[in-house]
Length: 306
Image (cartoon, rainbow, N blue to C red; front, side, top):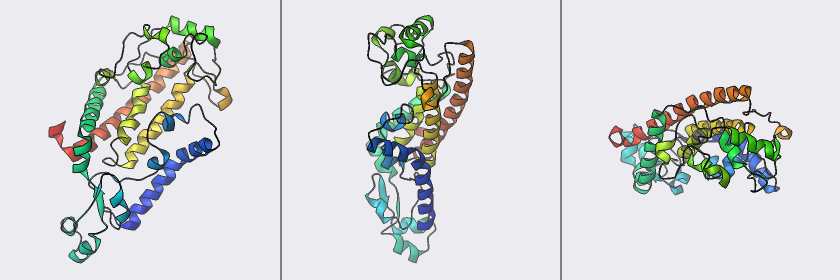
C-alpha cells in the first residue's frame, strides 16, 4: 500500500528517468529531425513517449488518493473492506474507498490472457536455451546486401566499406540469424544465405539469449505486460535495449563516426572478439530480465500456469 505523497514521488522519479530518453526524441520529431540510433526504440516499438513516462507500481500494490488512476486501463477501485484487510483503519478505509486504486489483474488476464501465455512461453524457452555467439551481427549486413540493386534501409547513411565491400563481407561469412523480425528485413538476395528461415510461427522455438534483437525485445515483452509489471522493470529492460541498439549499429555496415559512434569492425578478428564479448554480457543481463518478468507473472498467476 502506498500513500499519495509516497507513490507520486516514485512516479516523478520514473518520469525524470524516462524523460532523459523520451524528451530528446520528441524534440527531434517536432522539428522533423531524426537520429539513426536513438530513435529506434520509439519508432520500431509501439510504446509512445507519453505512455513510456507513466509510472506503474505493478500488480498487488494499492495506491491511496489515486482517483485519477480509476480511468486508466486495467486499474480498478479498491473498496473499504479490501483496504481494511490490507491493514488500513476502518475510518481511513471508508474515506479512501472512493479513491484508492490498484491494477485489475483479473481484467488483464481476461483480456490479455493469450498474450500473457505467449510471452511466458517465449521467455521460458529462450531463457533455457544456450546462446549463439557466432553470428557477429551479420543480420545488419544482410539488410544492406546488394545496395546497388536494392534500397538500403538506412539510406541516409554511408556504407563504411562501400557497396562492394559490404557485399564481400556478406558473401564471405556464415549467416545464422534466428530472429524473425530481423530476418524479415533481409534484402531478397540475402534470404537464402541464412542457415535458418525464421517464421512468426517458429519464433518462440528459435529465439535464444545470444541474439541482440531478442534481447532488445525483452523491453517489448515487458511493456506489453504493463501495468501488470512495475515500471522499474520496464525501464531496466529499456536501458539495456538502448545499449544493445548502440552496439548493434556500431557493428552494422554503416559509417556512424559523424554521429559519435566508433565502428566495431566485425569483418576483422579483433572486431569479432569485441562483438562476442559484448554480446555475452548482454545475454547474461537479458536473461536476468527475462527471469524477473517470469517471476512477476508467477506472482500474479501462480506456478500452475507456467
